[in-house]
Length: 382
Image 1: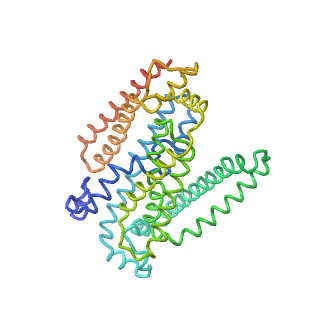
Image 2: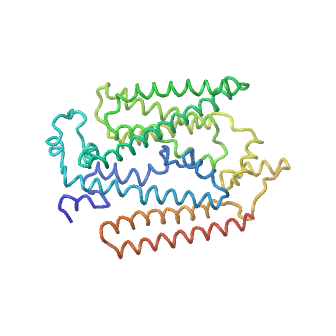
Image 3: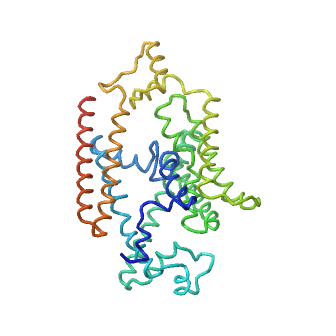
């Protein structure tokens, strides 16, 4: 109810502010969620999601683990951040308050994202120590994850596959260590160009702009091949580097981040679609195995199914010819459950207990319905 906080509680942005409306509402809702790939938000699938799903005992537990992760990740984890953010609006209502409290901070890094570390200075020594330890733990685990992830790509997908297929384990470990050092050096060279955490996040989004559609369509269109994926990743990276390092020195008009994102999506999409149509498709036997393994179907695979049947090796089908419609239903139910959990927690924290209970009920019903639909799917496939 505090006058400094109430205006910040609006779910929708001010529709009179076009730039704000487009950047924080229209782009994320209409484009970003399905056409921008970045770790943890992976249209078409990726390592962050796959490592959780593949560690489960079966498909049902895999779906349950993924749903639980997303419910906790999006529904519960952000709320402590929001509470700290609301408190910072009371303690440091604007940048002038931050400047007055920290007069020795360099003006170049004085921004709204400084409010969180500023709030840490108000914590008692013992609790502050725990907070610093948790932040260091999060940083080190993230560094280790991405360094190992990057080196595994270089070792398994490049060195062992193309450079030295007969490499020993000792050689692979050595290449992995060298790659890790190189990645750290490259990260240190890039860091000075990142003015804030938002700059880093914008760069990550820009690098993945336009690749999400490719990673989605590879399950639905037989024509996509390895050259399509390499082109999408290379072009999106080049566009991101251009806007980050080259364009600021060309003297052109300023380009908003959402405009850069849209440009990156368009350029990357045109590039990978063009390469897809100009390069040879994957061989028939690989396509037949892929189609059988993932139970691909729909309009994008009819040509492959017809070709397999003509060669006398028809692709086996389960009772459910194409699982995508029921999969979309499951996705909608899961999204409903996760969003209901998120808003239920928020309503409870705001003191709207009746609304919180209703939203919790919606989450429960959506979750139960989801697992009932999954049970029907599995019984058909069995």
